[in-house]
Length: 314
Length: 314
Image 1 (cartoon, rainbow over the protein chains, first blue to last red):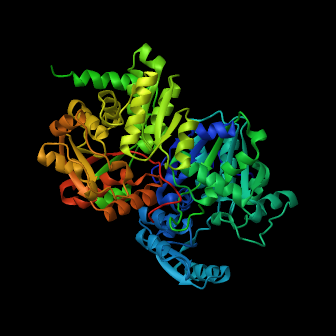
Image 2: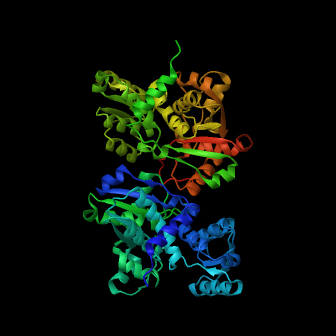
Image 3: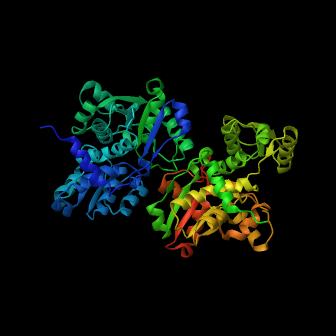
């Protein structure tokens, strides 16, 4: 049976509106000049915890049963999802168990603790992280929340594009970065059900172009290399979000590391806002495909702003 | 005869509203927690040219007579006023002569040229800059625009606080940094004529506390040292703005260089917006005078976001 995505999206928006910021949409005269397009930036870098992940985490948690809520949630992440699950759980009064690699920066562990997350440190391998998350899931009965391959998480991430489209109903394209696939899948559903003649386009660093290759081969591809500055985009798609992406994402544009850094700097200097490198990938895509986007109205989901100020690429 | 400041303020707001951005007002849950106050940040870092100076420059130029406009304007500045006068003049279709020190960073000269300003380079002394500006004033008949000691400039700077107060009419205090005095003077007039029971408080680096000392001594004091990171605040007050400041500014809080850097970092990390060091001084003041501001509603004019990303203090 086909899911009634439209109703699920409407429910997600209603459920999480009290829990997250309706983030502002900004534009830059100069960037519009440079791109010869009209770009509307949806600023999830201003979202609670500094990233769109707060939407998916909140929607996953709010949809738990009372019994599930009483046992808490568990996720493994060293990044934005760890903070998002911690705060979303805290706001709803439930426990959050966060499995983090022992070599994660202290500042990230502290941020998670400050949001109320209960940190368990493990060896820095995906196997160790998954094993510990599974153990907590079994021992405590805590519900596992996957950062991208979970239908409620995907619906939560969709709400950013829904808010954007409610302000700007006449966009030609909406772009997101593609990491684990939750944001682009949710966005493509929002665009499909809540816009006219708008398409969703993904964007990815060339060196971690797993989603680009997955759309070509028809199966979930992985990355051999992960040496991109866009550290949020190193992961691969999942079996829940991939079919959505296949059906609703028009195509994926890949960009070089230099193009990412240049786009990041352009946003910092011209818009005076702080975005993380992963977040600059869609603008890099617009600028490396200028002919395609010329004179178009383009929405870009600026995914997050959590960046180590001591390690800037410029 | 006393000036009818209220009418002048209303006229300035009406005149420049089409020429500048009505900048957003942002808040941060975390910074409110840390300060135990409610802070409303008026984001002039998002203003055209990246600083509030665009308001004063626009208001000065729009008030010129047709004959004056035909002869252009002249200012000397290596900073935000150079860009503001260039763009404001360009937008109104008149010539802008900008005297800049020959050792000003190339990127600043290029920015001024990109906005249409006609750059004349001189030796890097205040005497050389003033002499050249005066020569252009005499040779070309171009009207001199002083960055802070000019009534129309002061009225233009006031419009930021007017916009802030129109959204948040119940503020207890409004804070600005104090450099040449145009912003704090204008803000204090806006607060006096367009709020109830609100006071204007200035904030200054300890090492360039000329305005603090001027309010104590009753005459315009100057700085012996200028070694502050807040490079926009090294100048002294002028004979037009000082009487306004004496009458309408409640007091001035001074802060250390460390407090400035800490406040700047807090805004970057928590609010994900880029501000220049001068702009962090009012938040530093709120945080070093916590008892005074506890539970108060505080407006802060975030004055600008033009910072050299290659030279950050953290």
